[in-house]
Length: 316
Image (cartoon, rainbow, N blue to C red; front, side, top):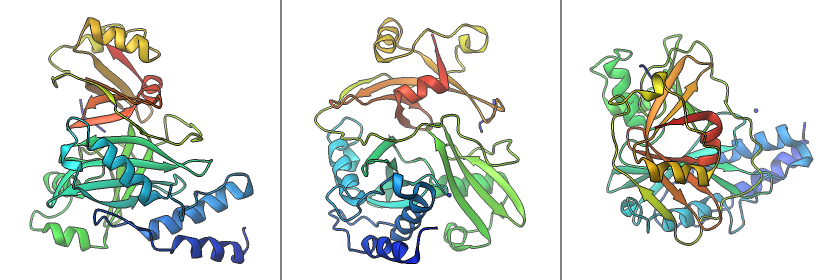
């Protein structure tokens, strides 16, 4: 199966002046201040005085938060390349108040994080993953557009990046609704942000979930990690005609995984236009209570377990 946002001018000036205070970093990463400015302004317009924007000057600023999460995750198995990794941030779609963080080590992609601002002024680690095929990888997008003959095969990667006639927008609606929106010569294409596969979409996708982000992520201490080898979900097809397991929380999921280590997660995306089966690799449970479901999607992908269970089903 194929995969597939009026305050007064003085207020805006005040916020902008806060945003351009230099942020101290520790591993040579690049913080996209333009995206921070735009996101903060979107937050003001959409939320007005009822929802505070994150204080980007404080110790819980985006850069400090990312550095803390990177250092914590670097101690976990499979994240060793994050120990010396640099990172760059890129804004997600308008109104999302979020960023994708691409981590690189010695010029190679080693993972990613999806970060969102919360209502209480902190940040939420919505999703993360390891490997050289991160979510919203420009390299993956470039290769896919070449393979699909949507851009000439003679186009170099550097020309592709610099070509302003190829408009590349990152749209992240929720944990599993993440796409590239690409405009080429008055034509619009949507591609899966992880695999790069062209999606059968005519319009921008709608989020499957409409959660309000209130709680920030602490990501402290040592994680409890359960990890099994990857497998091809098409080798066994109970998810096609069988019944899903009754799994609504962490305990039930742990019990199911103890009974059978090859479980398949299936979600219907884009109003049923795409069925996405993914091998379940395990989970990662943090001391602050956040638990992430680990899926094999062109590399390990860690999505919040609770959200994933509401978006899809687990099959034996």
